[in-house]
Image 1 (cartoon, rainbow, N blue to C red):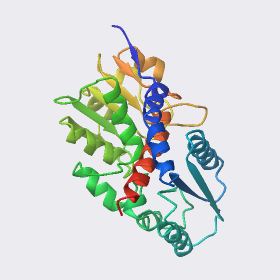
Image 2: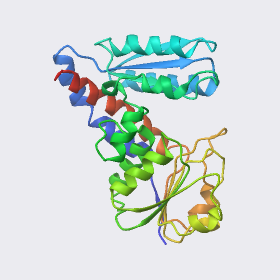
Image 3: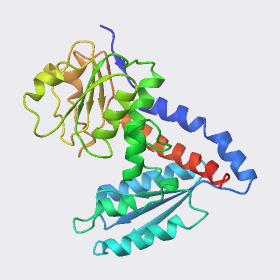
Image 4: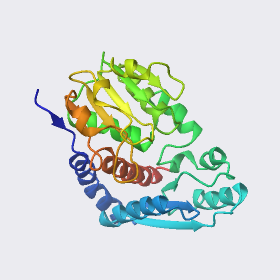
Length: 280
């Protein structure tokens, strides 16, 4: 069987290429799409992710504001910072880098982000809109997964999709998005019994569990589509790539799979938000 390696860089370049003219048109109207990123504490991985997002903005001629906050900040103080950004007309998107320190009420902080600026799709309202297929800014990694499927014309209608993971910003929203595309969806999690047997039923498998090389090759149904949304230390995904490649028809690598498309989706959402600001 000929294998299809789903090149996330190609998909990301396509998304970003479509933004260039839109950013130029906005600049003619005096608007520079602006993403504000908030980093609480000094987690090295989070610092890297924030820097990557800032560099991606710069390369497209967008603005990026980085706000570094101490690890011991309170939830109320964090929400106060978010509210300042909510009321800043020059900021079009707000991203709170997660995870935040354990003493912070992460859900309260996420939900403080204005829905018009929730370009990372993390608010409760954004989640609900996504479930109804009506989100302006669905969660970026789930949206990236759907963008990869669309780019490669991989149909999910009528197929059995198995999602491993149920986080509110990845597993649950991508399950809803697949369901809205008429897939039959099974969402698995840490309490799922006979996980391997369920995964073997999947025509489409999405791994979003946060464990390196968790999904093994003999779990994959021959001809399945495998989308690895994991990123672990050492540039390792949640899927054992070489093993799963044996049975899969199409598969995303790590790195250069879902990750670049996630960042491109964040940029797209920020440009979308900047354009919508003209209507307010």
